[in-house]
Amino acid sequence: MSSYSLNDSQPITRVMVAGTGVLGAQIAFQCAFSGVDVIAYDVDTGCLDRANARFDELGHIYAAQIGATREQIEAARARIVGNIDLGSAAIHADLVIEAIPEDLAIKQSFYRTLSALAPADTIFATNSSTLVPSQLVSFTDQPERLLTLHFAHDVWKHNIAEIMGHPGTDPVVFKRVVQFASRIGMVPLPLRKEQPGYLLNAMLIPMLLAALGLLVNDVADMQTIDKAWMIAKGDRIGPFGILDGIGMTTVYNVTRALAERTGDSTHQRIADYVKTHFIETGYLGESTGRGFYRYPDPDFLDPAFVAA
Image 1 (cartoon, rainbow, N blue to C red):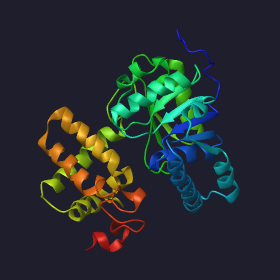
Image 2 (cartoon, one colour):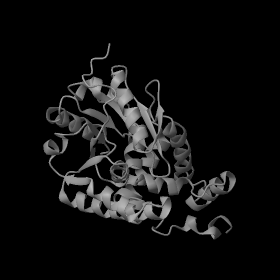
Image 3 (cartoon, rainbow, N blue to C red):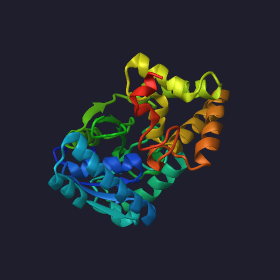
Image 4 (cartoon, rainbow, N blue to C red):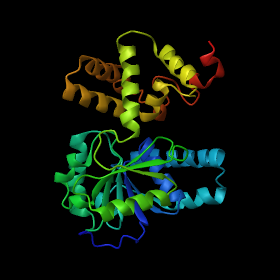
């Protein structure tokens, strides 16, 4: 029998998005665009200033790519309120979507603090790309309210939401999050068991690691590797363009964790390469204007790229 106290038909209407980086900002904006009130939480006002710039940019993107009206965009912006105080940000949240850095220690510390501040019925959903909820349950006071809700980059067009619980996740909580995903325009993809990387990343990460391995082992340069993928698969973007969208901080954290867990020398070389060429230089990907490519006009978008 479910131990959850809320009726499973009660909609989620107030969401706190923790972390306003590239994907966190997209999640917040998509929720607000779908009529949900959003608290955008981050650690300082500088982060929120950057988030507001991302929200403005997303408004232009939604208008250009999905035909959003000025009124819809203004209404979405009005539903987003920034906050740097975790307690007041979480106090009225039905759901917290955590999109903070992909670092287990940082996430564990966040959930310890959040558990002491959030209401008893708040659902905790991590957007982690690689961690599973079982790695976080001991840091929450009600683990039955914890699960994962994972979004893909460019949520307005790659509109999947992967929902994954752990063995102790309450089925009612799971059902409510599936319903919420539908409400905000996502296609819910429920998983039956824990799987690192969910569905999408379980397929995507091996390809990206293979591309990075080819680069650091000096088999080919990044443009040649991207061309191989783009021409053969008919895709408009190759692995290194995808990595820029993900962001180098996440790429570094993931590859470092893989190197520590597996002892694989190629994973370690990849982590070292990303640290040296991107983390230490500030070239963190599309969000900063430079990663493997320069933005907003990366070379791979030029039709001549795959013909040269």
